[in-house]
Image (tube, rainbow, N blue to C red; front, side, top):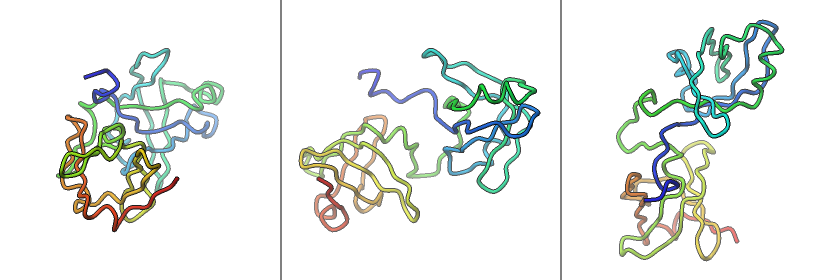
Amino acid sequence: MTAREQLSEYLLIGHVLKPQGIRGLVKVYPDTDDPERFLDLENVFIKRNGVYESVPVEDVQVREQEVFLRLDRVQDRNGADRQRGLELYVDREHAVELGEDEEFICDLIGCRVVDTKGNEIGIVKDVLQPGANDVYVLKTPEGEMMVPALKIAFPKVNVKGRLMVADENILPQVSVMND
């Protein structure tokens, strides 16, 4: 298994958008279904020069879907402004527990998709979250295919094996092709 095919040790949970006020807080866009998960964090990882570096998290506040926090003990607006654009990660050990039949989006991207007979369909290129359910974007030889993430359409998902099995009888009913 190549390094690209292995599951990442770190999971993206947010992006620093901008400074918030003058005391070192930043506003974070949460890349997680549960922004309140930030309340339990003591540290996050920031990727600098290809290396994940642990930095302390303080003064976390969550208001509806917005997250505000202090990173790396920064105490002023200038320091907070230098953090603009940073991506925040957690290691798998500190990731939220997933329920049955749940996977992290980053683990699905790059999975091979085959039908129940083993015929290649494509590769998961992206996962969209428009509302009611996620949508898998597959790169296929015929173009881009968008399929709702339904158990009936994908009866088997094996992220460790980097393989998803799709029901070839259901796909034509629920998928959309983009050329």
